[in-house]
Image (tube, rainbow, N blue to C red; front, side, top):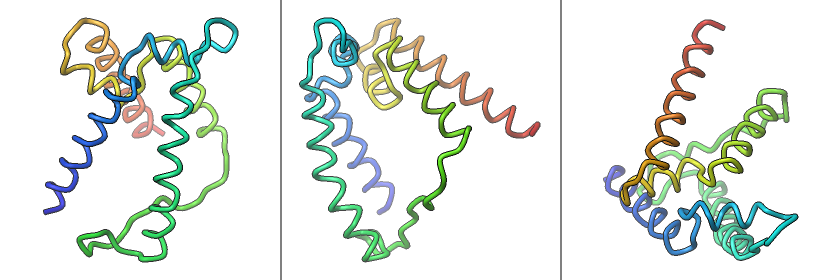
Length: 137
């Protein structure tokens, strides 16, 4: 049943990305263009997501179990370190250069085109490089 919940959540997430415009790189780049023709609409999408997610995560954290009764595994609170800052900078640079982040890029694969394919290929290569460097570390 857990796989069915994951598929349902992924489907709803993907539909949300499409409806909100987060899977459209030109809309994302217009949102990130603070000095030019700024489009604040994605700010409302992200704010709405926080308004829904914050109480849900707080409730689940108090409950300690998922809706189907499995143990809940939330990330431990950690400190802000060099790896987190560098990872955030790389993520932000990729988002700002391409207009994609991982979720919307995967959704955009369904519509075809070279750009999402190149982005996802580079993303997978970056994850593989990270894993290789982690094993050597």
